[in-house]
Length: 350
Image 1 (tube, helix red, strand yellow):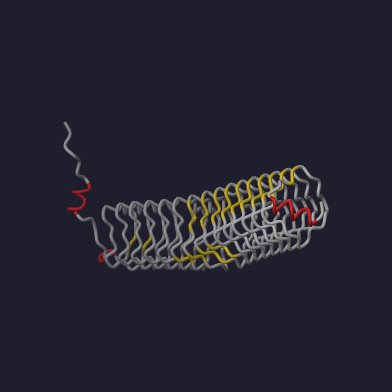
Image 2 (image 1 turned 60 degrees about the vertical axis):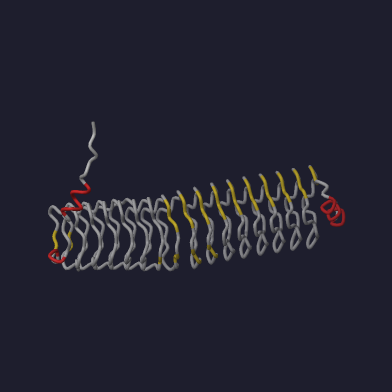
């Protein structure tokens, strides 16, 4: 099938079903809206072709050349795209479901609003790609190179991102949900409003990272390093982990409600107006920390070391402080008897 027949088939909505078009040259051809079903397109040349809104169903595009192609709103279902060249391609709002993109090259590609569902992208290259509002659901992104990418409003849902790199990437309001991010480094990045929900961040590094209004709720922070991080108004509610380091961090007005961070280090941290109600912080260190207006209501502070910490109107309402060391406790607010009575109230039964 030559480029002219391909154009006519696409224009008439005639499905190209079961054809063998391997290694054919369709560079700069027009096939917008084309329907390709169970077609062999491996190593085909679609460089700079117009394939907007095309449908590829169960097609083999292994090693295909699609660099610079217009694939806006194209749909790929159960396709093979291993080793495909998609450099600079326009995949805005494209849908890829159950596709294989191992070793595919998508450097500088426009992937804004693209949706990847149950795809494998092992060893793929996404360097410099625009991933604004893209969604990856149940995908395998093992050993993917995503350096210099734009990750704005991007979602990764239950994905495998082992050995994925994102150096110099821009991360704004990125959603990581139930993603294994162990031993990942975010150093050198700027995080803004990112959501790390129920993720495994064990051993990850955020040292010195600007991370305003980021949300880590329900995540595993074991051995995480947030030293010197700048995270005002961040959320750490219901986080868990031992050996977490917040030394020197500026996390004003952050929420640590119901967190379980035994032995955490908050030395010299700015915790102004932070909320630690019902947190488990036994053996934690707050030496030299700013705790003005911080709320530790009902928190477990056994053996905590808060010497030299500023505790002006720090709330210690019903906090467990056995063995704790404070040097500024006289300026803190102790248990409020009336509030304690109200908290102990039980409805009359019988």
